[in-house]
Amino acid sequence: MSSATEQQHLAGPLSASVANLCQRLQPQVSARTAAGFREVLRRLSAPLQVAVAGRIKSGKSTLVNALIGRRIAPTDVGECTRLVTRFQYGTVDRVELVFFDGTKQVLPFEVGGMIPADLEVDFDKVSHLEAYLTNAVLRDLTVIDTPGLGSLDLASVKRTELLLGAAKHRKEDGEEVEDDGDDELDDTSRNAVAGAEAVLYVVTQGVRADDQQALAAFTAATASREAGPVNAIAVLNKADTITPESVTGSGGDVWKAATLLAEKQAATLKPRVADVIPVIGLIAESAESGGFTSADADALRLLARLDDAVWETMLISADIFTSWECDVPTGTRVRLLEKLDLFGIRHAVDALRADPDLTAGALRRSLLDASGLAGVRSRLDAVFRARADGIKAAAALASVTALAHASGDPGERQRVHDAIEVLLAKPEAHQLRLLEALTLVTSGAVDMPDDLGEEVLRVGSNADIGEQLGMKGRPHNELAAYALERAGWWRSFASFGATPAQGRVAHVVHRAYFLIWQQLKAQTAS
Image (cartoon, rainbow, N blue to C red):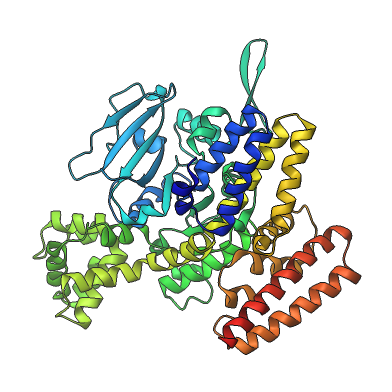
């Protein structure tokens, strides 16, 4: 690796420290371990990679298109939706089929620029897809679209389970059989998700037990430790399909109902995820990827002129909306349903009735606001992008540790361990200690009282100081005073009230609060 070239692509100083550690250790370890370190270095210099996961028909690919801002991932069930697809930045748009034997084949785009849903190749020989796009969003974020869970297609189920490491295989009398367990991913699956450091998990109204199991498998399959909220958030997709009357406190408002349901789901999924955010992926995709056109806006203007009674009747169901006699052709209404569904259509018409002069562009922005995509992006920025340096560095250290343990050489293992301890002792590396403490608490390895566990979760899962302290928007002097107070409390707890395991976590949290206090004091002084 050319450090001068690669270091400029590293996420930050923590990633640079881990990269330097790998480079220093390479001459001191076996050839096999050194090769592993080179892969770690490659991952460190790559953009943060987020795997989008969820059940089949949860709207994963629609959400991927919205996040990328381009309708490229197939959303109808087909062969391509049964494959892992990695969307990454490239100077020329192209899609490559990657076969299990390592060979590649360029795949032509469909008319309209989408990846074909079906392949004219031997599907069983295909490992995954690599999509390279000249897209600014992908400069610092690689998005990995994964097969949906719960498919009725047994081959797809098998592929997904292998991808997740949810099933392992062993040989008995020459036959390959499934077994339960926490074994490592097979080589093919590991290559398919190689480098994924974070998970965006898509749920709909009901969180099922297998959602939680799949989420656990995905977080374990990423390049980081099984760290839960360190590297995972969830979205409640299709928020517009929620019946407000089914959610207490919604006041009949769909978005309020979705927000309350997302909060309940967050409580159910913790500590696996940092948060659950509601979104309407279909509207987000149409508004963000260019699917919503001026012709659509014109059709909505005609609908906005309908009599109130007629309009409310048409909105009772999709069938009535498309079959009712009106000036807007049936085919046009079908197209609007495909892009916006009834909720989006109602929102657009309400906006046009409130402001008849609304331009097509302003209407598109109104729909985008209604989709909740901004909230998802904001959380992605807060949980992933703002903490990319720490997430990538922690993932790399986990890989380095695993490589050393796999070597079977006690001396090599000790050398790597000692080098990591030296790195972690530096003040600037404290974020890694905090991520490690968070992992210990959320995984149950260290048992903490619920209120203290929640506090560790809050401090370790946020990049914003106000959110870390649970006092977002409060003045600097209040934040500083609270940080110093909590630093003192955790130091006392570590010394007098904690078990040895709790004490190790408490010392880390004390240090985190103290560093926050120092940072706030420095900001006030400047």
